[in-house]
Length: 242
Image (cartoon, rainbow, N blue to C red; front, side):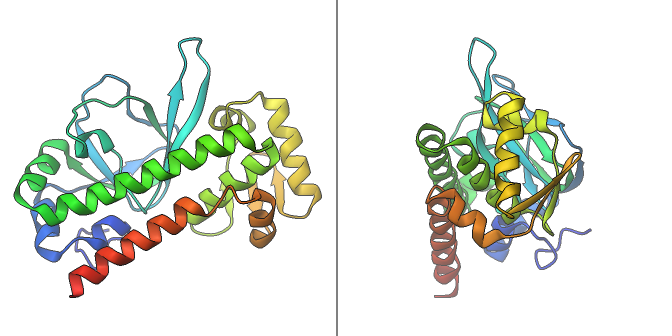
């Protein structure tokens, strides 16, 4: 792996103007992302921002009672460190790797310096934060209005968007964490989707075998945030050409 802009897979880095990309490149470091590695902790200074090349991470919200649920999902379409882009220095939630891979790490100080120098770079990162907030809002709606099997269908579609292939390694325990339910509920939801021929679930793995069917099963809870991301990124690229 190298850090030439035409070689990276991260969509945000690819969307940057070449001169903006060069503001960050001297500080870039390729890092391995291990499954369940914690890359941000609540109320702890964020030392680096990670642009995902492969793999993905979940942003986990917590209640004081100890209960947890996923409130955000980031892969090669985005970056960690949203608080840095918004002018803070500490994360509000825990972010951990759920699918291992590689990323490009940039010190938070370099991100802040680059945004001060370049309005166009700052605008790209702020646009991404807007899409992340849209995703979070969609998650809130899905969690509040959709049955568990439909929430699981949406979540699997979001995972499928961010990985290569159709199979993801995932335990029932971790699914229960990101969906905010007990493990038996996850088992039932998986059986429902498998019974409809949408997925194949084996020990520690889930394979998507009918994506179109999953989209129908999600019942409209999937697609809004994804469409907004595609629209805004298309606008960014169009402005760079004009």
